[in-house]
Amino acid sequence: MSKRTLVLAITFALLTASPAAIAHSHGSMPKIPTGQAQAAPMGGTFLNVTIPDSVLQLPLQNAKGEKFTLASLQGKTVLIANFLTSCQEICPMTTVNMQRIADRVAAAKASSEIVVLEITVDPLRDTPTRLRAYQKLYGSSNWVLATGTPANISALWKFFGAPATKANFTAAELKSLPKDWQTGKTSAYDMVHADLVLALSPELHWVWLDLGAPKTVDGKIPSAMKKFLSADGLKNLAKPEEPSWGVPAVLAALSTISGNALSLSN
Image (cartoon, rainbow, N blue to C red; front, side):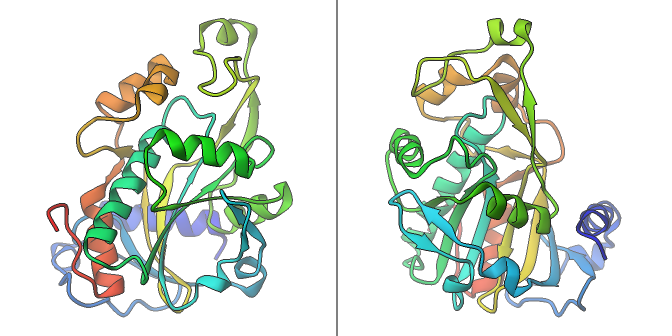
């Protein structure tokens, strides 16, 4: 099954899941046959996709410049979202959600078992130095931001069904866009990509996915990023278009996959 076909099948499963499937217990991971999917109780979809070594071994680099691979995270539950630091419409809200999730993981004393990871779709601009500056705006570093070579990042997101393409801004768009939060200049291009959040099991199988725009818990993002949002970004912050994904659904999925009790109140 192609990754595009898989994503379409998962989306269909989300829309057509039976009440029995939705009522699945949070306490145990459902046994999903390879290539099939089942709606998760709080949102998203459980699935079972084997990740080839060619993807698991792709070299990545965190904000400290340290190299790692997905394979090096074996034994941990891994939450992954796509983003770019130059995004003015969606990604700042993705990041604040990932930070909140990492906060709840830390509160549950599960940081050694669960990795919260954002991987850029814009490796040319998102260097480790840029990632560090971006993460500093959010006031903590308890989740991982990652980049890599253009070829490796492209291969990774192609596998997960969310390849990104470069889109240059028109002259009119350039005049209306806010200046970059770090450089003070207007970005010359954007990266067009599907928005998603996914999870890998400790065995490094792809076992959960949710699609759409992020819905923040309290509608708050760092002031520098709020100033950077475009008009569409401000609309998405106030009320994201459906489908959307939120922190409660992710915490429920991570609880099921990892066996740790995670909630907004823990």
